[in-house]
Length: 358
Ligand SMILES: Cc1ncc(COP(=O)(O)O)c(C=O)c1O
Image (cartoon, rainbow, N blue to C red; front, side):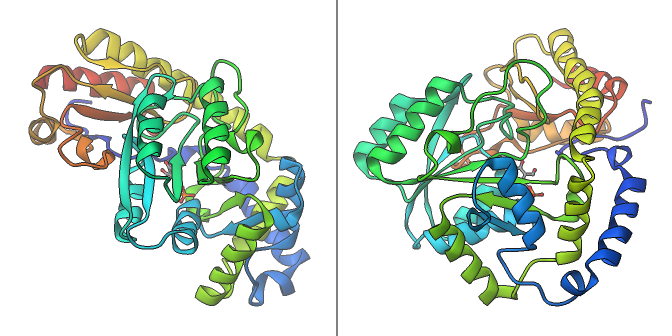
């Protein structure tokens, strides 16, 4: 295994996790059953049967569901419909690097709120609220990317109450929510403040990212605004993907697939945690209960930028910690460990290589 390059940069599912035969079968069935709707131009907010199915899952009306080509694209549309350049936006610090990139691209004034082991530091958040209400707060409440942290129920309730009191939107980005390996599910922030939360999710992590299928659940007014924006942008998203996923869901295949993924990923999380215990004394991390990542803070004086160069020579690819922070000066000691795309043996090997470099 020594000479294999081990990649700890990508939060992607392993290719062997894709249910290829089922997807192929559903693609054919969907096209044959509803070819006119799927092959003609379809309009945003998306393929009606899939939106109705999602609406039923969430207990809302279909007018509250928007579907698009990936949750990242939906977030970009939310930014375009909800933010003026210079708008204040609160994010968890650290947060998902691509979301930060999109916010920067839109000229947002990004305010990072530090993460604690159960979610945002509410004191800092409330101090920042006194300085000025944000247009939106972007939160990954379940198994956060990049820390793996899940926001506790009390904090969710407080966030929901603050959004209502101050009148800002919360974007709750939840692609990992169903990938819980241990512990109890926590209610979504959306369920606590449905008039103030745009709940965004995706089929990327529970089915396959190449499908590029994401969705948003929220009040009808922002959903209609997103749909109008999307129609002006490209008429509608890729309908064959939506038809195929609808067929997959209709056949009841999604839940068993998620169950199967949990059994693949849980041992990988355990391997990451035991490898960290064994090899990274002096580092700290919160213990995730699901998702794709463990976020590690290396001991004082560590420099991930220099470590990455040494790691590359040792056949180990690492992400830049700074990319996950709103201000680049932070994150020098932060290392995101994505554990789903490597086998338990590869994770152990990667962490033992890492230990030799510290
Ligand atoms: C928090 C978060 N949001 C969104 C995405 C992207 O999802 P999608 O493939 O639906 O764009 C990711 C992917 O890594 C993610 O970690």
